[in-house]
Image: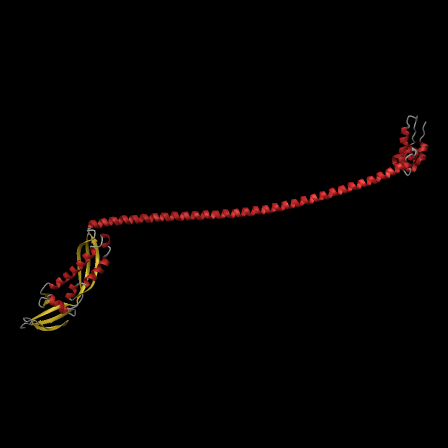
Length: 353
């Protein structure tokens, strides 16, 4: 009644009660009564404000791209910003009397756009579409350092670049190029796998060949050892044969020496016998043959004497007309009893005419 009203504000609002051009009350989340014809209220939000943005820029290689993201800010100096922008609040309609609060969002977006443009102008398309994090960090650093934002009393809390996208045609071209690169990488991977498989097979074959070579080398060593053993056996056999030959040669030489010695002995014996015989012959030189015959018959066996007698008879066969031999004498001669018969038997049984 009579224009007196009551107002209550949230803890996220900084409120200044202005009466007759002077701030009579200010603070966070105030509640008070006021006289509407002479009182105005300035309300500044103190909480963080998220502002989405999307704008188009050009890359270094003159390709159009779209940058989408969001920035977050808060008003740090309430009095400073109210001196530059109109934050007067209509308590009846609960709206701002001017569009300055909305223009603040656009001002910050423009600052971010300017710095994003400067950064993207130095990047080619392929790099730009993959540099969202880098771009967000650069925008945040540049906007925080700007004098305009400091003059407004605004603090930038963060920048997030959600996407950096080219137009559809360029995107399809990049996709095709990327697809070809992926296929090339797939082919290269396939070739590498095949090469790795071939290399593995080569290593396996080399290992097999190395194993075979080692086995052959071991076999060769075994054969060489066997040959060495055979050679050693043959050498021993050869030495044994040589020793046997040497032994036989020594035996033959000994036998030859023995034969020569025996021959020498026999020659010596023959010489002795010849000397004896010569001496005997010299002693018998001039002796009558009958005497020699009688001497030779001395001590002779009776059967030999009978044989000599028959020899004499045979020598004088032309003078003997008839010869009679008794059966007793013949039987004695055949039975070896001629010695018992004696010469008498021969005198009695034999007669000649």
